[in-house]
Image (cartoon, rainbow, N blue to C red; front, side, top):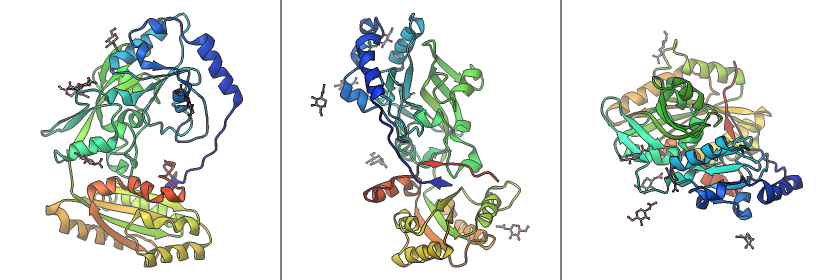
Length: 386
Ligand SMILES: *[C@@H]1O[C@H](CO)[C@@H](O)[C@H](O)[C@H]1NC(C)=O
Ligand SMILES: *[C@@H]1O[C@H](CO)[C@@H](O)[C@H](O)[C@H]1NC(C)=O
Ligand SMILES: *[C@@H]1O[C@H](CO)[C@@H](O)[C@H](O)[C@H]1NC(C)=O
Ligand SMILES: *[C@@H]1O[C@H](CO)[C@@H](O)[C@H](O)[C@H]1NC(C)=O
Ligand SMILES: *[C@@H]1O[C@H](CO)[C@@H](O)[C@H](O)[C@H]1NC(C)=O
Ligand SMILES: *[C@@H]1O[C@H](CO)[C@@H](O)[C@H](O)[C@H]1NC(C)=O
């Protein structure tokens, strides 16, 4: 289920004061002598631009922003803090999509991970064969990984809903989307990581080598080191998707259908590749639905009327089958079979058939279409307890 974005800015004068005192008195002694000192900026205009995150609930200016040109540079900074008599806080940031200030580091040093990508070495390497995988720099965006793998007729086995997030960022969390019921979160599809640890060593880890670090760094919210490279599973790419969007007015029917769709004990679960739900809280929210699917104006009106008549939230379920040229007919038959067994509101099953990339990148198109209305992509996706 997805909730819309709420935002409020907490601006405090104390934070600004603390920042000034950091620059004047607490910039770690000796930092200027390191070979990475030219990559560290205390320019207030720069630090201010890293003071908040996507959640926009907190505002804490870092003392400095660090632009590493390699994982070795990150190791140099962390080793310096670790061996210093006054260790200082360090945090890392990809696209800054944390929702509760997790990447913010008041008065500390914030690592801008994107600068690792400013290199002439390839940061997305694809290896095919019977067990294809990719080696990717943590700063890379999933959209760029997807784009690069599709050129080799491969795709990551597991993606997030929103693709303009970094590999290191989502692997420090979990990485979920409607494919989760099949493959688990993204962190269950990782083979190997490079991590700069809290002592400033660069360690390669996997299920076999340094497994404690591997399992701690995956989903570790950046608390166990800085992920700088990940190797994860790919699979053969599909070409297009058959996408059914079903509407409901009763949450009990939604949850029972979702369960039917994903339960491994049920013969429907092998059919679909992607399942997700969304809550539309009001007719006003329902009126924004047009940009997210190929609805006609009269479809949108029908959905708004459903929401108005229901006088409460309505729900939608997306059930999607991925296919290629040889599986197109069977994909259609499967979807028809599936619909017969679901309990959506009669007359409220809509169909769409689009290229795979457009489907996987749907939140970006939605974001582009909706930004003029002040609503961006969903604030978060979450699991609904039974
Ligand atoms: C910071 O931004 C302000 C306003 O945009 C500008 O006047 C000032 O020159 C900038 N300072 C630096 C150090 O770039
Ligand atoms: C700084 O020194 C480390 C070795 O201690 C090296 O690996 C790294 O590339 C250097 N960084 C820069 C920016 O010169
Ligand atoms: C990449 O290569 C180009 C020319 O080959 C060079 O001008 C540039 O400085 C290099 N960039 C880095 C980050 O090494
Ligand atoms: C990709 O391969 C090149 C060439 O072997 C290597 O220099 C680079 O470090 C690799 N990138 C990653 C992210 O593994
Ligand atoms: C994918 O890469 C191509 C260049 O190879 C670029 O033109 C295109 O915009 C990229 N697509 C996305 C969705 O980033
Ligand atoms: C699933 O099984 C039920 C009964 O066992 C059957 O009626 C139904 O057609 C099957 N559905 C699909 C999609 O195979």
